[in-house]
Amino acid sequence: MPLDWAEVKQRYDGGTRIATVAGGRSLEIVGVDDDAVYIRNPLWSDALRREHLEKAVDLIERGRMTRHAGLFVEEYRTEVADVRATSAAHVLKDFGFLE
Image (cartoon, rainbow, N blue to C red; front, side, top):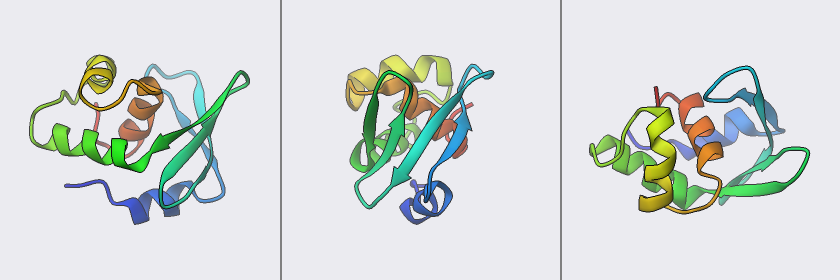
């Protein structure tokens, strides 16, 4: 099932905090629009591009990337984008694509 961007926008509109893959901490999402999910921590802020998240979900669904959150990060860097791979894992786990 592809990533439903309308659901992403609905869930993250206005910002929220989601659990990290390891638990115990959270990732702050400060907003979302048609192009990206915007994230922040005390040291930096950045964006997770829609096209990258959608590509990752497509690869997961086709069995070309793992569903295991711990292994996903390196595959994301190699197969999708070398940008905030751990944060992408948190978001995709929040949507149930990763274990």
